[in-house]
Image (tube, rainbow over all chains, first blue to last red; front, side, top):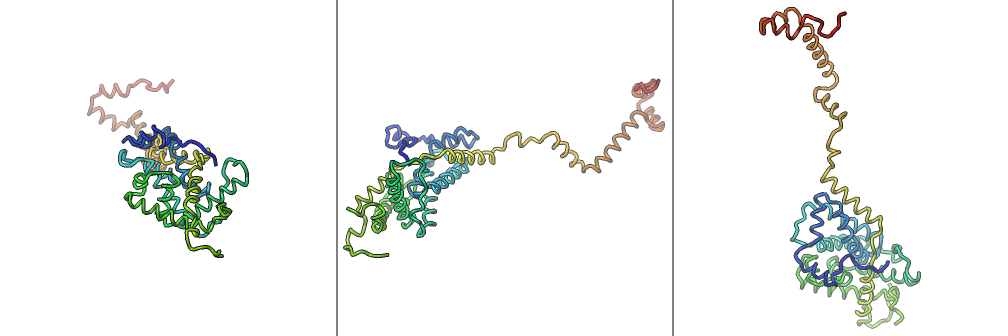
Amino acid sequence: MTLSAPPYDRDTAAGRREQSAGFDPDGALLLAYAQGDMTAARLLTDRLAPRALAQAARMLADRSEAEDVTQEALLRLWRVAPDWRQGEARVTTWLYRVVANLATDRLRRRRGNLALDQVAEPPDPAPSAAARMQTEARMAALAAALAQLPARQAQAVALRHLEGLGNPEIAAIMEIGVEAVESLTARGKRALAAILAGRKAELGYDDD
Amino acid sequence: MMMTDRHQTDDDALDMEALDALLAEARALQSPPAPDLVARILADARAADLARHPPRAARRTSALTGLRGLIAALGGWPALGGLSAATLAGLWIGIAPPAALDSVVAQLWGDSVSVTLYPEDDLFGLEG
């Protein structure tokens, strides 16, 4: 895995303007695609696939599964395109929701039988094999712990702490109130800490 | 699971600083889509679009398919055989009308029409 800039950054001034403005460029591209414009589909893929893949990969710690989730989420986007209503919801909000649901479905399925050594190879070589394996082990332990949480808690924790989203945005994604987000996030994080306590050695935190 | 002799306090949970560090590490990970994933996504987009907008070429039938459709609409090859026979008979009647028909035509349209349509001379140059 490598570090790279997302297609557009919510932390930049331009990103904030884009977020705060009523106009959703992804929605406009989606409507163009619905009319048969494949260039719009290409642009949407460039903008949305990296963030969907990153979200799924952080939750699942499995490259192959994350790719499947990304493809499935985008397939649902292509199918919903003709019925998309510009101005009702942002495409990114919709996509966060779909990826979160698909990822927690997979976490629920793997619950209890996740082998910590079954982690997909990252595409890029890490500085050292040992460091890479340690990172993979930590990410796999985190995914296994998320799998133990109730789905809504796992989604709230992942959106808050893995995607770095604010509570109002998470509330829109999960279609609940901000207070419910705060409650889910707090309970989820406490539960995560309790589950991971038994895995301090895997996390590399045992020698402190 | 083997339990260690640990105080039943916060030690049993991963401390929040360690958890925050773990979450921050996960948050920093980016995994750019591989070209084959992008290709699969775009293939899905094309397939979904094709399902909604079939190309004109696919909707337009070829000349051969059109002929087959016409034959089928007329009742298939056996019906076409009968139709061919009737057409040829009509053509023959047109070229060499029987005497009875000739008189009917003469009564209806007059001799001049008969002469105009069926000249006495060699119409198709078949003779001599």
